[in-house]
Image (tube, rainbow, N blue to C red):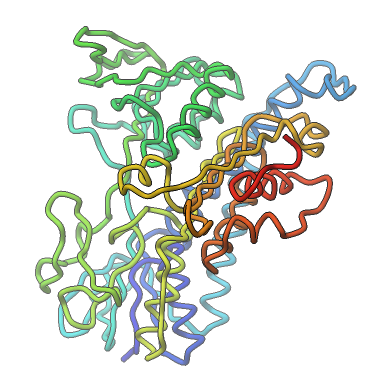
Length: 462
């Protein structure tokens, strides 16, 4: 008999299990995959970022080193070694999760889990067993959303999982979907020499991001060679022995695209199938497939909780981890909390894009009076030294109180700099608070301080 059974060992599940164990609960964790860490560590966040960093270095060596006075001669790509490095990073981190579960006394049960009701979970694995606990946390994550008229085959028409493991650089990669997954993976293969074509149904990339930032990223990616087609409706595909033809419509006219690889990246959906949710009375939204929970993450079935990609909110690893901590604390009788207004998002293209809070479009829709403060990286000494001056920092503040409502960054190391905005919003900071905070010189973070100063008063360097 356990205090808690966690189903899923991704960023939400293993964090929930560890936090619960730290609080003195007896915990079991069930994971159906061969390795721990979920999609993020195995076939998502970590392997994609490993390849993004490797491919960026390759691109710098072939296109930018000479500007720094570095002559390297002929640069060759060893894709096998690059992929092996990626796999090594993944193994190191997944092994680390296994170590943490063991260190915290968490029982690991490999296999698929099914809810039986009354606190029982059936585990179908090499050693089938039935577990029992007073609380169960569902943290099964998500899977790639399929296109019913374009089934993937894992070879020619693929999901992001297979697109991180190509044995050769595609001659032409067609990406269906202009979200962060498609743009990140498309960037990897474009840097390594592939022609990349992105087909997006909507009139802009990244519809959840600030429009000014999204348009800036589109221009940058196009300069890098990515071919982007907006308002393009994909209708089907015809597979050949070597190349596939993607059929689409643009402006009411039929148009075809041919490539040797097609990546379907139109989003992700909750991985709730096979858990036995309906049988035990767990309510699921019909359209989205998301599990319905209350403010304490409890489902409609008493004692059964859900977090991460299974429930409302952005499908982000760090959001799932925060929910994992909070739900463990609730179950242990402690106060748990997640501030959904301060969850950052990051896109690891080059330039990177990061954001927290509201966009200009959302503020206009809400009728909020706001001010804008922007500062370009081109005006910072550190960015010039790095030869990486593209992009800007943008603050959105309440016109009356100066309180920060949103921060948006496109540029070098945006993923790291967004943390200052997250912390500021968490503590209800104003633009003046950020502007009066001393930022080291020369650093990229000076752009953060100057953008805040521009929103509050006026930037000093413009």
